[in-house]
Length: 241
Image (cartoon, rainbow, N blue to C red):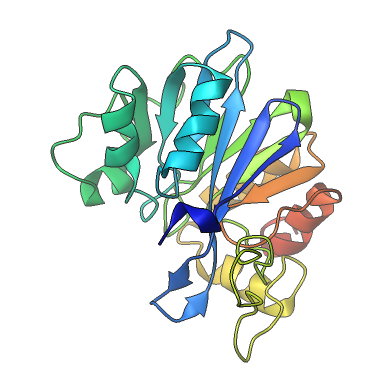
């Protein structure tokens, strides 16, 4: 799909999103989104979840040298090779489940789920991470305190994905379902069903709940600009009781 569909936006100071259309199973509009954060040392951290088209690369290059390329979970690995090829000096970090599914020629500098839990990768002064070992897709949630923003892939969706489809003729609405926001009954059931280890989920859900964020940047659906903490509490109330 052409880069003419990419929506690039600075959602907060030093935080940029790259939003594109994406159909789950080739049918359901889920949308896709990468996020780039300019770090305090001048480098750039990228959650790479969409193609590195020309427009995306131009903006990222304007921000500074890419130091970290992040895979957020088991299924968000498709574009890691593209980013690593463009930024060979960047550290490539992802969960073990993503490494297993990714291009076998890629060399990873850090692996959540294999490295010791207290491993530091170098971006922690700017961005905190919480690896959800008990979640089916082995997601990692990230917190950028400077902008009060939480970033993640599949832990929380906010459908319909209107921004991601705003340059197409589609509304981005999910057929039959419509709203799949974090406060919906269906999202709560989905969040509960994806937990494979209740104790680990309770621990990690609370870790994220204790972060001081108001914005959530999901890979699927619209950015939650305000009220993000309540959205998280609503989506994961089954693990917070």
